[in-house]
Length: 159
Image (tube, rainbow, N blue to C red; front, side):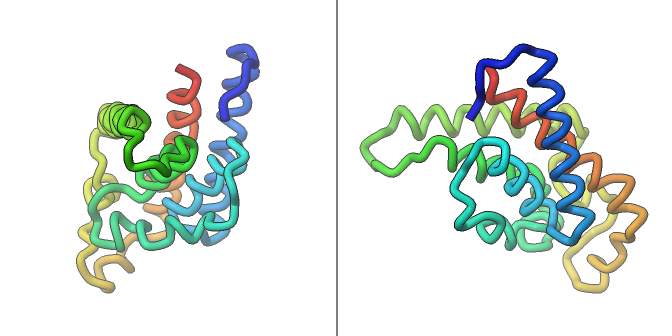
């Protein structure tokens, strides 16, 4: 969870976490797994279900090109930090939903899109289409989105 460090230290930590996420992505984790794993590292979340909880979200919700997996990974991490376990605790649930709404809006503003197929420029409804997301596209589009999504999630947690 967020600490009480100064702005410069926070920025450096956020950039380092973003670089870790990018390294996870380049090593073979998908976008959702990479973001969740980096945020779990940063926030000390239970790694038992990380990155498995995010595996199905890579490539935009089960590789359908929908909501970017990096954004989903950040939202999973946000939910894990809230530790919402009591159905009657509506205030925690509402806070998390409000924070998630604001985060998705910020991502849309930052990236111009929130859907994987819009970000990459490649429809991903079929395996053949997904294979068209080249290493060059992954390096040019996905790595920076993964990196920046982690930084944005950390910045949001400090507010």
